[in-house]
Amino acid sequence: MMRRVGGVICTATAALAVAAHLVQAQIPPTYIPDIKFASGRSVVPYLEGWIRNPDETFDFVFGYLNRNTEEELVIPPGPDNSVMPDGPDRGQPTYFAPRRQPRIFRVRVPKDWGDKAMTWSITANGVTEKVVSKLLPAEEINEHIMIANGNNTMRFGEEDLNKPPTLAVAPIDEATAGAPVSLTANVTDDGLPKPRAPVAPRPTEPTSRFQSQRNTSSNPNAMIGLRLTWVAYRGPGKVTFETNPVRVVGDKTTTTARFAAPGTYTLVALASDGRLSTRKDITVTVK
Figure 1 (cartoon, one colour):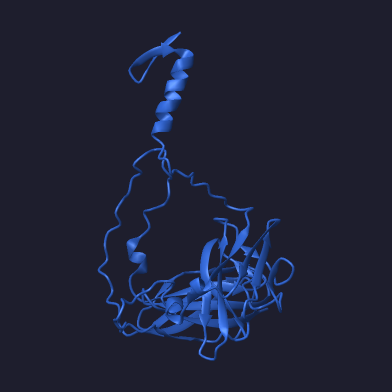
Figure 2 (spheres, helix red, strand yellow):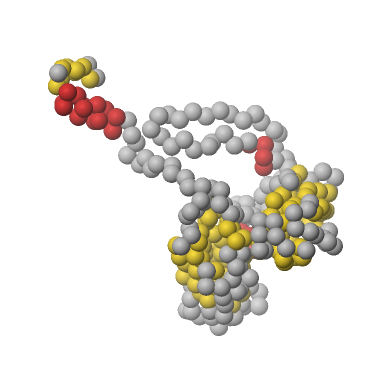
């Protein structure tokens, strides 16, 4: 049986080979399938770097990657969530939101730490991931990188006039599992950087039907202006926020949260002006 493929007449077997070659030729050599998993995957701890403190102690800075796009995991300190030595509980998160969460917590070590190692191990969905951390010179960072969300906002030789926002979070007197709880905070800023003018989102199209179909149409206005983001850090269950992040209007933000189960929770409030941020941790006891 004769077929025409790409302008060439050939046998059925040869036609299949030619068609496969034509398809393969359209795939970029660096193509990696964008495979996503809603659940069932592991959580990978990350060392973001270490900080030299004024009192000569050191802080290891950690984050994590929850490799699931939907599954939220609660892993209490213990064999499945351990920071050693002197653990297993060194203040690490017990609630793991989906995807990448950078610079989420710090562990302080003494000035005579030397060449010793610190290991954070996380077991999720039957898979154990760990990071072994040392005070390597190439991994030193500073406090400015922390408040600048991992970015360097200053050019060499110039002073950054922008200051991080000030943040005050109202205490929560009472909370009941399943019931809405009001979260109120006051945020002020110096007005820097100047807010960008809103722009319309620009549609994007893949250059090839074989390329990854990543979501590149995110709203560019989502990062404009002063805002407050709530993060569930520790607790026995999921925390659902009504609005998150919250835009700051008149120095005040309000949203509600629902706690899935009774117990003690730690929430993190992050106020950001688009470049620099301020963090506050609050403890909530839920009946």
